[in-house]
Image (cartoon, rainbow, N blue to C red; front, side, top):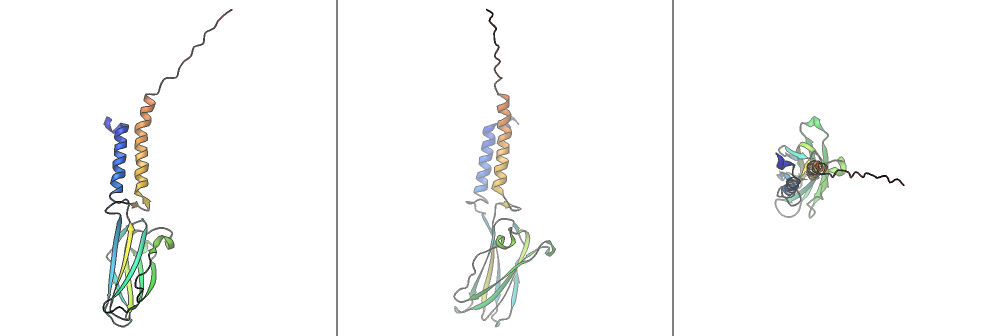
Length: 194
């Protein structure tokens, strides 16, 4: 038990925790981003609206973006009207976020839509992404939701690791400093009588 209270051990644990974060969900990590895609294959019925929905997925409140891309099945000409909805599950939990995109060849990719710009916060919880579109030709429409991992209910994990590390190091170093604090010097004055 005594080893857990050694300052060098506390520092080693803190450095290991930061390393695990950095190389898992941190900036250099294999799991830095989570991506969920929904694909809608349009049959080519002229302007017949079709719909597809993703399986349920979860978001943890990290920075989240949406991109939509369209690709004609034959040739290189396409006109498409696409709408999307990010639906919380169960539906009563929150409001549905939605938007529309229009695609005309050769511009068949949307810009990056950042959910925090309109919602004020990044989405947190379980969701489905519904995609519907109509086009003048057979096409494939793909919507991709990308979230940066390393957040827990919108709070960055590195902040939690940092606070826990500082608290742990503080709990090991401060008691030791108090234990070995030098006693105050007592100066005894002497009286000289003339």
